[in-house]
Length: 104
Image: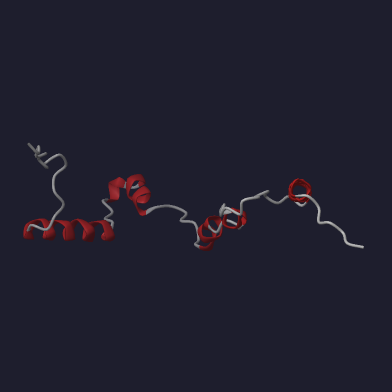
């Protein structure tokens, strides 16, 4: 006794029903969908929670107590480095200083 295989339409309907039942994506053409990557847990919140949150910024402290003339050493050093670079001609260009050349 030979059994005939089920028709393709029956197999497709069964695959569609199985995908719906097991909460999978029905993909009859086997096209890559990226669903595996999209189902993965996001790592962004884990990374941001790894580092302690900064309670108050140095800038906020200097703004609150401006009468004490507090100096942010890191900001001061950054500004000095920028001034040195500008003196050597390595600084950032001024905004809007580029000239657009038209091709004729």
